[in-house]
Length: 227
Image 1 (cartoon, rainbow, N blue to C red):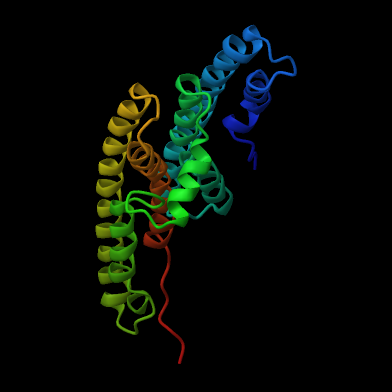
Image 2 (cartoon, helix red, strand yellow):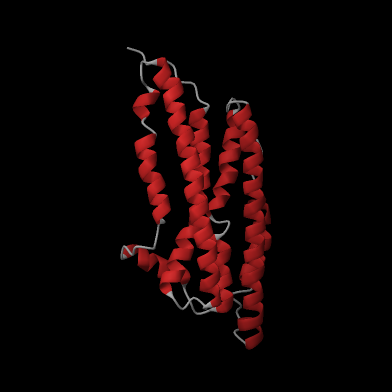
């Protein structure tokens, strides 16, 4: 199975533009013009590659669902491509920030906020809710129950509910993340709170990858437990 993603294929082009952001000669042309062009271009290439991967993941995931995940290679192909959702928006945002505020180390700022346990840093609040309900809804005891209805019907209902809940919460995260990221860019990254909210909201895109695991379980076969 061909596992190389679109973003992997575009990586050399992305690296070429990233190299422009750290030129050996620090004159004005290199330091300002080329650097900003490099950040903007690499952000665009990154977004295109990751978005293409996510589109492929949706298509292959739909086929995989229809055939009840019977093709292991196709399932792995889907999950590999869906991982691109983690960086589809968060990485371009950080690079665009370098255009408006070259001196801001956004990664360091976010890392410090996470270390200090700030409220709007790291995993977003809606993502934390998803993980909380995941533990409550996906009761693995249902999957190994000796009762056929509990094992094959009730367990799948809880998974379906969790898939819906996860998607709703992730869409809320993205709406907040994109809105606040826009404000953050227009204010040149001067407000740490906006930067933290934007980053956590955009990184929540990776929660769509949870659907692959849930759907894989949903279409699985749950034989009666052996005594």
